[in-house]
Image (tube, rainbow, N blue to C red; front, top):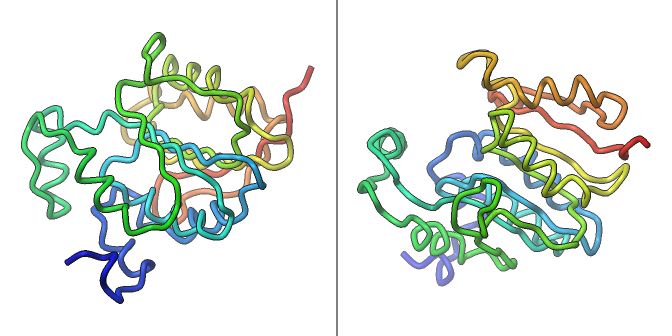
Length: 216
């Protein structure tokens, strides 16, 4: 079925995406995306198969914000393949998932930019321009070096008192150990620069913050 030619409600359609948390917190993602300040962008690190992106797109229809999605868009190994199978999706190892994801998201009448590749220091795909960021959704940077680099790339473009950060794996360390507590350590050090808004929505490991401004 071509969703663009059907009468299926986009909210219902968004709920059908294979999800590792995006559907579970979909209403929050939509709400935050709908309130992005004019002229600012939505950044999503780690889209997987587009569940979170779909809900961001629902909100972006109201705010008019463009969405920038960073992901390898690759089924790299058997672990990735198995994760997809659990959600009812058949992938093959080595599959480029970008056509699958972008095709599924074509139904949403918003601008989505796909940045395919590794997000690490020096990578061509791990850059940002000078556009202000109104909403930052992170489902990728659990380790210290990666989180630090993401803040280096994007942090200067957060809008004081406005930018919302949705950290999908904020509590991942509780299952995987302190190596993955980089975001918690960072927020503890920068508690005067970020306002805690809530966490564990939809039974997930997410936490949400508002950027207040960098202190001199």
